Amino acid sequence: MPAQITALPTPPSTSDPTNFNTRADAFLGQMPTFVTEANALAGEVYGLAVQVTQDKATAVGAASTATAKAALAADQVTLAAGQVTLAGVQAGVATTKASDAAAILTQVQNVAAGISFSTKSVSSNTIGTGPKTWTVDAGESFVEGMPIYVVAHGDPTRFMVGVCTGYAGTILSVAVTQISSAGGTLSNWDISIGGVPGVPGAGFPSGGVAGQFLRKRSGVDFDTEWAVDPASYLFLWQQQGA
Image 1: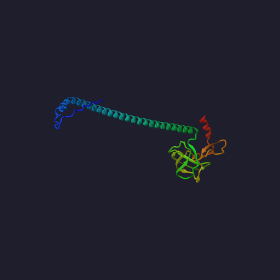
Image 2 (image 1 turned 30 degrees about the horizontal axis):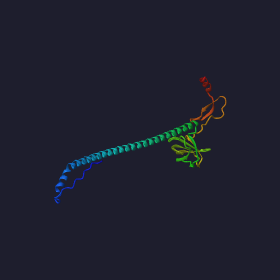
Image 3 (image 1 turned 90 degrees about the horizontal axis):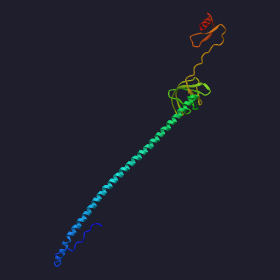
Image 4 (image 1 turned 30 degrees about the vertical axis):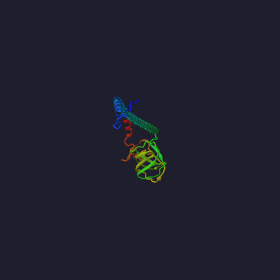
């Protein structure tokens, strides 16, 4: 029960001289008790004030702790989110690497099968020099700088030769530098690595009889003929080769 102060008796008054002395004695006689009870109440109030201050400090500390824990929890959530993001990135990298590995394997298999550097296209193009593009199959092994030979399907007299300037997705870009004498606009092409087809050699001349040998007729390469052996060269060669 909280401290209480006993009510003081009726104080003396000069307007009531008859009861003045009696009331004065009673009033003054209560003063020691009043002082004791007042001090007790003051002590109790002080104790409550101290407790309130302590409780406030405790509450502030608890609030600070709660704030710190909340901040820590937020940091942990952020860290967890970062780890999830990192895991997602790593998963994406792994997927990309797996995809790249699969693509490389496919290219290696294509190269082994001889199909990685050749393709077909139905893109319409006019035979001529300059930059040109063809829509081709994806997954080929064309790279920038590679020599490219584009020939009309079924008609080797119509062709274009150039250098690959880019290959992305299904688009092959070529800088055409040489073309066939036969022109035209076509939409059926065979595309592969290569340059201008070489001119067939003259081969061996027909004919020739016993005692003749094959000799160069002039300074032109492969310009040969059958001729009589005027000095038994064949015999000498046979001796040298024996």
